[in-house]
Length: 376
Image (cartoon, rainbow, N blue to C red; front, top):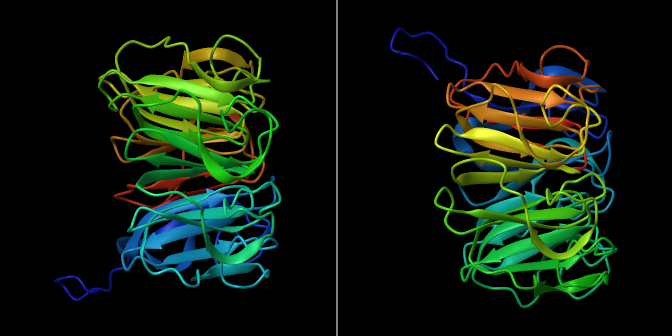
């Protein structure tokens, strides 16, 4: 690009930071980690519609980017085919997911990926040991396969080994791993095709943690109630207990005002609340990922001090990041791989400013099973 005075201007690019041992930062290297933002190769900010981050552990991970032409690019770990390029070879720069040209949404789980199509059906690829691809089998697939019996879908989410879809009628459908009740059907039996979450209707948003889920019931920002189910050993369901729940329970609404957004990390949960778009967090806090200045687990939601004007929120394995109204990215929690992007590898239990070298950020992502972050 050239400005009016003839000077060369650098196009805005998708940025990434944190652990990179699987090439999940997409910058063309296998450098261990980045403590400040690096550029994902080949993707301009203008062509990226949506980003997603997946991962199975601290050093693993993969990235997805939905482009304006409805194709999807992927990079990072690929041992189970989660990049959808027909191979099981990892790559450290974006490449195209095959046989996919009409995507409208994306989600990344542990080692599997999902895409919502224009026709409101869903495809999936990658690891399938628990049926998380939803195609009636337990065979991994390195190319997209159709999720069986699912239509009229308006949103998707992916946990570590399970998947979710929100349909037009406000019901939530789940499939995959279920040992902790994360499918919400009242059992602990894994399932390789979708089925509805018990007793849950009127849902407007969904979010998936590693082994738990959140749903916002009612219109976002207009009286929504947060429901949760699945694994709860660290209080991530927010119901004042540490008991796993096999059907949805109500998160204790310790906030005032309405809920506008929900998000989940591996074992912690997040909600944007009130007219000032404040943030509440609950669940595991080993690395300070709740941002309340402590490392104490919280079994009911607590406010994140000093955080208001939250536009977007994302949860990682043990870190959290938000985009604020002043266009800054703040983050907190685990930082051993530089996933907070503040130039250090020191954990922080209070928010720090991420050095993204980006203006006009309108997308962020973090993996429920990984230690890295994206912003665009």
